[in-house]
Image (cartoon, rainbow, N blue to C red; front, side):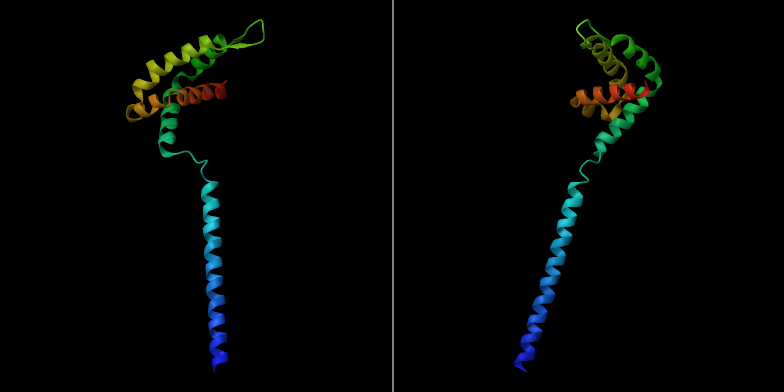
Length: 126
């Protein structure tokens, strides 16, 4: 009788160890799946990007031409972007920021990001 009780205890121990290993495996998969989904756009950035696209779209043709005219390569082979940066900054402060609404404060705190996103939209449209 004691032998069968020992076998039951051993069997129970093995089953519980199996459950523990299974739970640890799930936790590990969950950790790695969360780790590799970090690249998703956070909600505040997603709404800001949607607003930027909506506000930039009507001006896109003009911005593409202005960018093309203001970016040039100097005699040393360096791209000169000062005039374009000034024009893009003017567009952002005069056109985009006053129309952002609730996203305005967030956008001002991330002004370099806003400028890069708008410039990327313009580059993609050209």
